[in-house]
Image (cartoon, rainbow, N blue to C red):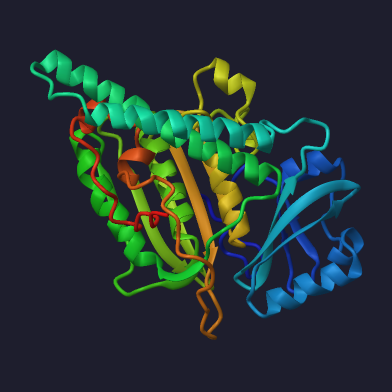
Length: 379
């Protein structure tokens, strides 16, 4: 990840993305080439009042001065967009997401809900039948059962991601936000993943602050985002090529950085990673996250948290993904909402999210109840 000095801005991700940096007063200091190309105009030097309604521009500047992130819908040069503003070292980092006005959604929400429900219902029957099978008597049968069980985990993961991505694309993805210790979740995941990565010959290292890092976030979805990124790296890196995961604090943001030494992502594919699986990537076997939706989901989840998800990659050298999650002000944050649901229905969350990257040998034993979340109460 390269750094570019820009006034007080000493950190900026070098990525092919729709980003701009603004001064505290709302003056646009930097615009990525991707955003200039998409808008067919360079906004450099202009004010937020010139491109957004005055009331919205004033709100953005005020929230930035208070150290708060902000997500909003508006129009930019006549194009419908969703934006995420994050204060960064005295300036404002604004990420722009263009609405797919000229293209149909990748999957209509109603169809995704129906498909996800059918997958879940079928899997429930399959897992029940699986538990009734007698133990395998030889290695060939054991391996065959492992392959079948891994396939069921993959289908479960695909159903969850498909539904959430359809909800995100239609603007109906909702979070279950609670005040939690991000360090605790990070450590739990890394301690589970490290021995698995070692067993498949991939060096995995991680670094986390010693003390707690409390902030409001949806634990279930942030877990899925982190594990989805790890799964991608494990699939597309080679044995003996390292994966490093770091959690740190930068000003008023918690930052998670995953860096690998895999084969990298072609520059032609990078601009499409956060929208929908590009047809070119499907034909070349470059799908990300099984069905190609894990990064799309990661971007949507971080945006709803008021954060960002940025990728930089060099072919044959590796990929770096940086997630930022805004930390709350000093005032205490109240946990609201219903108890967190268990999207995996009690199955091991780590095995579920890594099912596209781990070998079948990890799926020999009967799944154990996940310790991350309680199972939903029976009605």
